[in-house]
Length: 564
Image 1 (cartoon, rainbow, N blue to C red):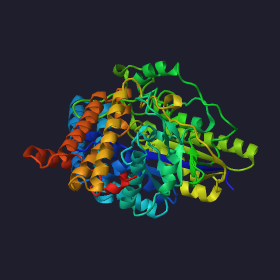
Image 2: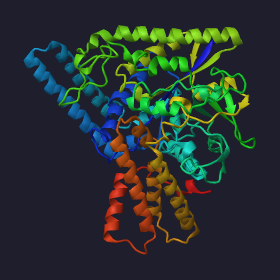
Image 3: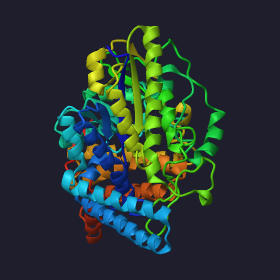
Image 4: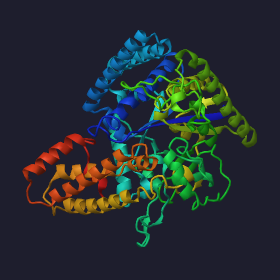
């Protein structure tokens, strides 16, 4: 018997960006993630498998990301992007050769080789379909893919239970379309959960409260077996957060919120190293909850104290223009960009081995202590954003490969997918879970604050309008306009994406997020107006045709997901 079962969870997500700009905000986000995160991750997993390892990890791919990675426009955009990067590296090689700049020349050659390999792997190894490539690894029993809300809507704050149900059900249906099976796990968007209670919309606190189902009830209805949460939702207390060290704007926002924050008290002793069942309704099958381990999380998430802040690693922020390639190392956590020194690719492997060994020793310490005290194996859930590995931390996929190899070779540790954990440990203790997310403070403040409240007023207005039109449509009181109703639904789903509030609060792409949110709201309003017209005008037809091409996700959308 191992001393610990480890469930590593990688959450892959980007909002719908196809057709909505390219650089600095837009499709290049998707291109960067594919080139720096998804393909390197596939390559590292494949390399482990070829060496005889079985990397039993969980990989979440949100439905909206699945839709983008399998869309024809992405394939064209991505190949063009790779060619641009290869050309940029070639031009840099010429310049650094002319200047006899050997340090930067070595990095330029690294980039040239890197993007050429990514291009070859995308075309010839993964046949231009990364979703199918991950699916094949799941079919071979080597990993488990989990789903999420359709467009990563922030479920606890949506106004109607029908909206929560639609996000979950569409998340399941899109998963079935791409992976030909029922998903067993889900990454709740932003790990945000709300139990059942009489709820009042936060934008209208004077309104009469009304009963809402717990988020777990929607998961159970669609045969989801497990989800992931943060330790403070299980045990009470203050969240460690993951964003403050990376986004300066949040520090200012947090100072105002912190005065009002009151930690939830733990009702009875619980451990993040156990698996519990969550239930808001005794008539509904409970759903298992996996709790993020804060000790291991901080070792990777923290840009200042974690591994990504190591001086030798590639710096994320400083880029060379034209071309946008990165040539500098971190150098130091407080070093000004002007003082960064050249990156040395040849010095990295030993540092990765050291950090991998340190991480595994940390896991073994946790496992040994729990096993001694409890007399049973610990369950350690280690979730991260996939985009951290490769994008924020360029060397991250290689580090991940090294820890998976070390864990697989250790008799005291056992890698396990979520479904395997449930079948092995068979949890039976049912608990109630606190409301909140994994954001700073543990509640909703990153997504609902003085900067984002206006977005929720418009989301609630659009939800009310949509369900009024939907009910008329399904009763036959509105002429059957299936395509219009489906596009109206797409705009509502895209409007509900939690990414807009996150980008506004972090100021990382605030103008873009506000513009995107406003555009989806305006699109929604115009479609609703067109639906009430007796006939289309020529301008209406042009508008709808353009919109169907731009926001073309969920082409086979089944409107019944919005039913009562």
